[in-house]
Length: 514
RNA sequence: GGGGCGGUAGCUCAGCCGGUCAGAGCAGAGGACUCAUAAUCCUUGGGUCGUGGGUUCAAGUCCCACCCGCCCUACCA
Image (cartoon, rainbow, N blue to C red; front, side, top):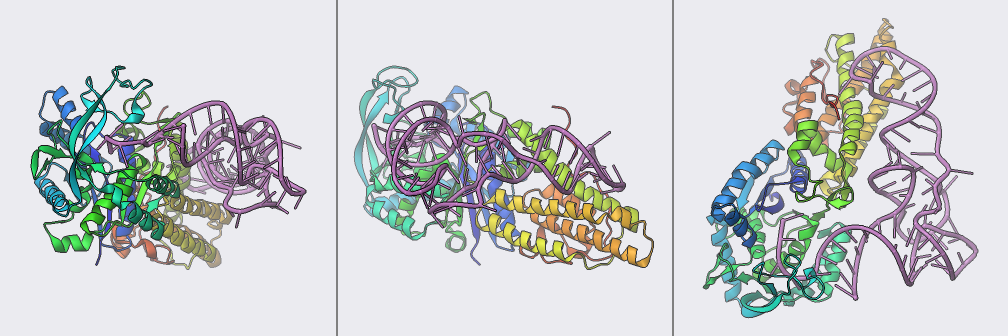
């Protein structure tokens, strides 16, 4: 069976991970967990991009070798954060690993042999102070370096070039034939416009520094970091080393990227694959920026907030939930401590957590903690079926996390409303058989609804849903939560009478202070 | 210079091809209830739809200009 393969960008290890990195990685994790709960063979890849001048300089500044710098950050910052956030990636690739660098050299050598790469020279504005080329766009007026405020020199460097310019028409044709190849639509439009303006050949080597993969036929050059980095998506799944595995996993179904690196993934990467005759990925999805006070969030500005600061206060599950729920995937989104607090309190604690709490309390109080036998309410059952189907389409197919979660939480609100309307605490006072049967109907409906919600929210909030699953006494009858199928979650009547429902701990405790 | 995106209720945002489109959620106000994490449920939204023109019987919804914010423009995630 062909794998459902999702990748995050491989992150540049210049520094520790921030909220933006975590946002993309959590999204990929939720997407892949969702597909695992569809019963699919899933492959989720993340990793780090470790070559390039910037890493080299940062390492120097810290008095260690580039490799030591990367090792330290990967082991002490990156991998621990993914573990902390419950990221269930299947592999973690680093571009300094031999399994990657060897294949990169082979790939580039192949293109060279095929005549896709030629030797040329690049001329551009160069700042002596920075010791690097600038882009024409970043120069200040009068061609001044934005950092040193000094005039740049126009310098020429011998480079190897990939014939990217020849791929414009084929790329446009591909975009045309696969309207969903680049998403969201706004991102697609930008790329199409860009390619229509005409592409230039791409300089794929550097000779001014040496922290990179050597060009196999000319070791005075190293391969341009982006060519190196993009290839991780194939080298990690067996390209050039394990044909069967590669065949099974490649092409990727979804490359998740930040919108800043969209062009590399939607233009250069497909062209590289075309040049090598490899299948193209199914989709490149660009997510937006997280904004604070209208500004792009980053470590460098004062609004930078670390993932740990948020998880310390709100918890990991709420963290995983918040950004996906609050921001339509693909758009920039405003984030604030206040908004997070409001959603935590309103949606997670008051609506969801409290629903679980009141239902468990009533089954305990009125039925001694044993779920009574009943068919349940038809309207709620119907609503659940629709909710599950729409959430599955939204999250699993369209990567519309906000929309899918919105549906699920609408259902949670509906169940709260159902309880208020039915007033089981009043029905409980009626000791007649009819009254008890009526009470059983109401509480069974609520408990069975929660069973489905636990399944549907498990990809997003696995720790919390496990607590709920335990509270419902579901596992002895239905098996492990992670093995519940999202497609099947909407089928009514799965939680059997006799299930041991216990109060369990509060799902989302009220926030302290601030 | 070129390209793109956005400016709608206190906050975050929906509003597709023009005619119940002036909306949702949250916050706020009032009420009901007590099973529950002082939770839940119901009721309650006149905001120049950035500004100025234009097209039209009719414009947040199309066109033009302008103001403001952000992003990209080939090699920093």
